[in-house]
Length: 598
Image (cartoon, rainbow, N blue to C red; front, side):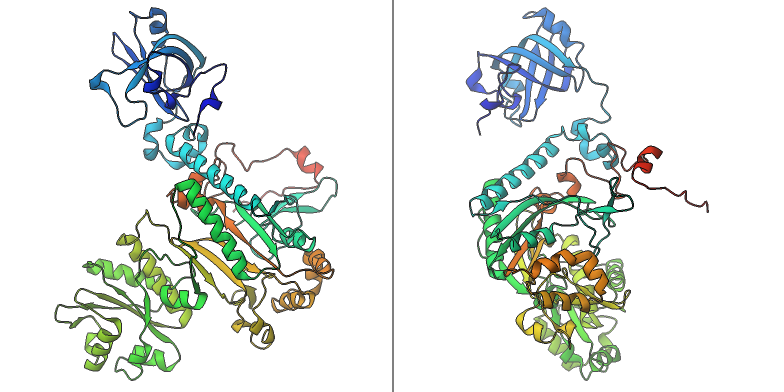
């Protein structure tokens, strides 16, 4: 990339671009003082801008005035210098930086801004408490890591726009002040001054607007959309976040998935210089749960789940036999890595299974002679031992982890153990990017707390053709036309073919136990729009923040967002959320009640 466009009246070059080609030439540089070293006869300053660092030399025998001014310079001062590029002495060459073979002998310096002692040194960022870094984010963003993270994110958005623009998509903005349509996370509400007692909601996604645009004849649209959800936070969640959203008419699931595969191929080539193999692997939700215990499995390592229920149908081990007779399953995970777990390790695995809902966890160590070391070994017949060895292809040193539970609980418990072991044993290689499509999700799940059906994705997802026929009779057996894209064990996007029939949409709402007046109040405009000729359509939303996190190999999305909130949804830089004046509250007809003292 050429950096000549960065040259201005105040600088002739960027710090990180000064090289051997400029030896003997004059350069005018601007930037922040990264480090100052006073050697008595000489002063050295590392000058930094976003492009890198260059070493400045202040020599009193060359220019005394500049040398004297250099004595007053401190870290993070912003300065402008003029000097001549020369080779460094051989013993001071630093090949760790791009400018390490040269230095600039300064004969003019101007202080553009002074700085207080910074709250932390940029080079010590990894040792600084995150809250301190978020409070002084403008310092944190100066670090090389954050500069790289934010520029990588910029390259992702640039590649995204270029890809969609070249394929006939139209970039359409949708409202930020929208209608509250509660069916998922809580909305952030915005009071209306002009309409007292009424509220806007910040959109959790542009879903309904995307669909409405399809009804309006825009064959395919996209946007990089800001979304808002008032929910409990974790490392990969923020109250405000960014999605790559698209919607297309006259498509099936394969069309949407193929479009997204092309997008990722373009992003990886332009951002990371990597070539992805297409198409991505695709498995059903049922297969994903059965083999990996998760609907977003990490395929960088095998460690798959097996069903051994049949082996124990007539077992003397009553826990397993009773489970099979009652319709539950005996499922297991075989750890074939070179790992010799301690009793403490095994107890930890049992606790993980219990936290995941399992009543317990049985373990078996396979000895050198293929005998079993286990608390349950004495209950197992020779036939059962041989069947386990044959079915699971067991070898000396293997560890078998077994649960006897219903399908969902068994998969959940072993899936959580799989993730724990993948992390503990470092089974996943960081440099590998493994994509996966998971499709054929159930349309509904049963919510015990609310005693009703809820949507796995959202209520606008279409059931498959077979499912439409059994919606009323067996709704929990209905599969949907939905699909999630997973990268390295993280769901980075989800989408579906949408419902485009008014009667079917109303039926789904009623199965979700949404009353008619609520349907009309929250979704009336969608129902009305559907009645005016809605084409078949589908789309997807990709988590921009999570994608940037994975591509930059960070563990939290806060590292790829310029001004993130903490896990308690506080903006430490600005002090938000904050109280507002009584006049402001009066303008929007709101009264804040004081909480009662405990």
